[in-house]
Length: 141
Image (cartoon, rainbow, N blue to C red):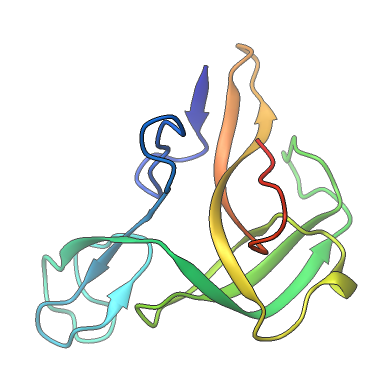
């Protein structure tokens, strides 16, 4: 069984029926800014109840690094990549990268959203999260 690292961040579609995952964001009905994750009020203009939007598709890598020492409580593999990816909607998302070697990445590189296994929990479930990876890279599961 697969469980999300945190509910409300992303969709975890069945690859047999809907292979495209999406991040769950918001778009402000007043100023038009796009936000991730979903929020109850716009962080730019404080308008309440922005509309929910799904954020997906290709993105562009802006910045990245590798984490080589596990943070407290972390149960996944190290090293792992972390980066900033700008999505077509204009929002920049900080997230895990499928590539952990900083030398294999470049500013402006195309990235795509994937759902990857983070670790296995105490009940034997695969805990999944979102990550970004180069389009030519195979998607880890």
